[in-house]
Image 1 (cartoon, rainbow, N blue to C red):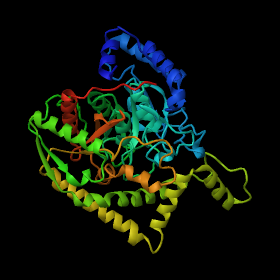
Image 2: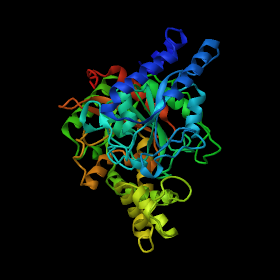
Image 3: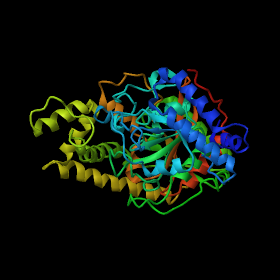
Image 4: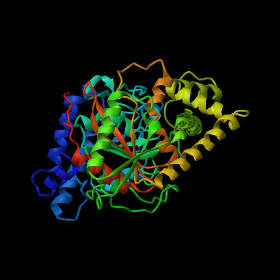
Length: 479
């Protein structure tokens, strides 16, 4: 069931949250051995939260639509007294003493946490293959990746092992796995949701998002998560109910389609997006193609900025205060070197080294400073586009989900999976992946809808309008 369907049944006392939660826990036991979406299953905490939700519902008090609804949280978001590993050996047994602001909000709304889900180590990857705890598999084809870094979040929603999930998006890490797994994935405007308690990869790019079964569910959850937080100076005081305009359609919309986004894209993906654009035309929207020539520079700029910030953020994991500490140490220098060398995986070490290099004397101006200039150019180009268009539509990824191990020895090819999504993070825009079809192997394809900063309402309207009019038959994965 969707959040809205389940919430109605809970409020009408047709079913209890405890019953629903037990059902989902059984689904996890039956399916997750094959999918491997969860790192930690919190059965005891889930049943306690479900009991509390049932008491709230029985009292007759006005409750959130999320009250009593089972969900999951990506394992780089701090949850007090629940293990938070970032899918890394270096934090393999870390239990946070506090919760992220976004989880405090969702927990306060009565959400039931089923567990913490898998990701690429420290959110660095596009396939969940870099996780210390093993790869998460795509529910549509267990031989393929679920995407990344929020692969566990996407897979558990697609496989019906959670009603919705919270992920994080640094360069496409919510939208790309959502596309691969056939669910809706939302990355809000930078500053819309507090990052306090989100273990940082690249602070100027990271943003928490939602993976859900449909656009309405994603809008509901984002409404609950959004808002000003005194612990995060980048947040803004824009309280918005995204449900207000959700079903107003897009008859008056002008939709921009940047032609550069369709270069080097698989034909099945192109065909699905073009067919979706025809659907928008039938709904009364105006479609215009335009050029966004700066987009080709966005991916290298993203990786320079992201790796530079990662090299700074991950310096705190040194074997001294918490997390993994090597036993083979002789002095302070060996403590740092061996703990980090043994505690971090290959991809994390690669990005730390790239970032340190880009920030080093003699290379700062040539790489990092130039990447910041490119970031400004990308943002300005989007500003120009949104002076003409209500929303912009692009592919989410150049292809559908690839086979596990296919790109294991080619990091550049893996990085190319983010080519359609990274420009949005550089500009701090809201964007959403909405399922729009399947390829010849019955693997899901996602369409990316972009809006100007803090205009998620337009993005949700466009997504909901397409979802209601979509003429492709949705395929359910069989585990």
